[in-house]
Length: 280
Image (cartoon, rainbow, N blue to C red; front, side, top):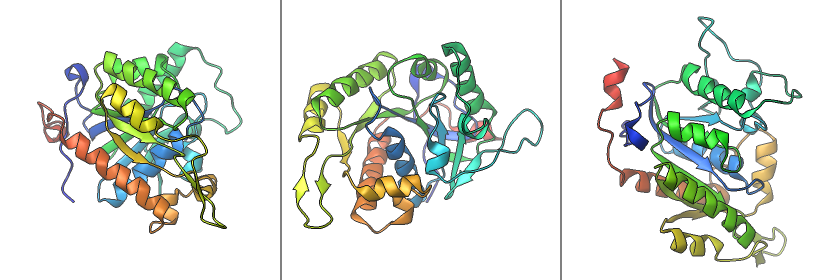
């Protein structure tokens, strides 16, 4: 597959020399499966032929290394920059690979945002088509730093169908709009549970929440993902379900969402300066 076109970013921030497009994955609250969605989206994009990385921006609760089965510490060839870790063909970086697993990050906001910028700027990213940034829940310091200093081509907001989740996810949509980051779409996670014994489909968290939210904010629904035990089991084992069971209906749902994401990204204006020029 040819390299993905770089797309315009907020306030004409300079593009990263090794990354064509940065996509932020956020949510207004925790517990909606945002990190799991981000990692499986990355795997689905990679399976489409793109070169993909994941930056874990959740400084206080990093989970990407575990979900990608990454262990050990990164190398630093020059003592200043660090090589990205790799899991299942995906480049990744997280504070979780730089500190011990049980070490709590008891940092104030400025320290956390400084760590985010170091992870973004000092990692020796390869020639990536897309870098997925897995944001922490909410609309705080990390999100503000992202919007001010990191060139973002678009955002994806993850929610569940229930009203309390869509209420908070709506705040995330408005936040991205205020900081001039285009929201490419919503992903409705845990939309339906199908019993593995009898096949009965049950909407545990309600129905239609994603559609109502999309209509209210004028953004598309990229996909509806199931509440399936295999997603949790594979994530806990360090192998995303898209990688572990690529032919399963669950994996197909992630790939459909990834394809819709690329379609929405393609509608955005192209970057004024092709990123290839900064790679010379």
